[in-house]
Amino acid sequence: MSVTKIDDTELFNQNRFHVNQPDVPGKTAQEMKEFMDYVPRQVLIPKINELTDAVNASAPSESVYKKEETYNKSEADGTFAKASDVYSKTETDSKLTQKADALDVYTKEQTYSKDEADAIKSGLLESSSDRVIADVAAQPTSDSTLICRENGVLKILQNVEIEPIYDGAALEDYGTPAPCVYDTEEELIAAIEEHGLTDTSGSGTKCIYLFKLYNAESALLGQMEIRYTIRSGYYMYFIWSDSGPIMQWYDTDWAAGSADMYEKFAYYGHTNLTIDEVSDFAKQVFCGTRAQYSEIATKAYVDKLIQNLQS
Image (tube, rainbow, N blue to C red; front, side):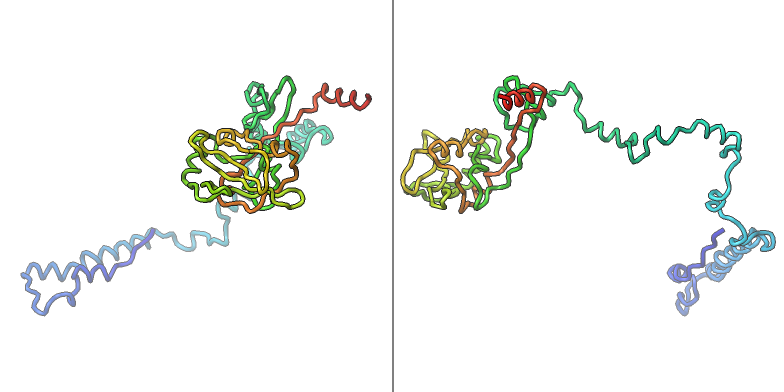
């Protein structure tokens, strides 16, 4: 039983003490009687009775055990077993005869628990899922399929992460095709227009400067820009330091992932090109992921390789 203390501060705040009263209290005789009796009758006597009840309710010390003389519940539960919870010798021997030989079973470390198996199962695809095999007309750039079938040939997806374009990067990594963070032409145009044609091209027209290209001998070939004409709209344009064929790629192709800059330079004999002096806008736009597919080593594929080697 818990007994609370008398709150002296609370009584003081309630003006229950003589010290709280003025020299001439200004109370009637009845009010003075009630004031004088409040603390003894309303506070002290009930509290003394409460303490008396608590003492009377306590067991005599000689009739109870001290804590160190007995077990608490947790100690008793861990020390003693119920008869219904244990096997007899006969029952134990019977169970042992049913025990599997260690050589015939897997240990916990050698297999999965039910929870672990369920967790793995939840991450697998159903055999009927359209992500398992997808027919494509051409090599896809999306990573929405795990296995594709291109012209009857099974291929498996490998994602190649491409970081934002950087000084010294190879054009082969950022131009086959040119990766763009925007999936639609509208999104790309909005980014271009927000930036604005703030730079001047080598021919004096307004443009957004992207980066410069150097050949394998570190000689400057020219610079890549974004230009605009009423007829063509926005497009990437390469202006040569000296002279060269017209090279441009429209924003539609760029956003669609089909603007292959490397292929066009290679067509004119320029390979092993290096990107340098990259602008902030180019770093913002030229980045993404490239999906590559390689042929699966099916039995027919391996047989074909062996035939080629034998021939």
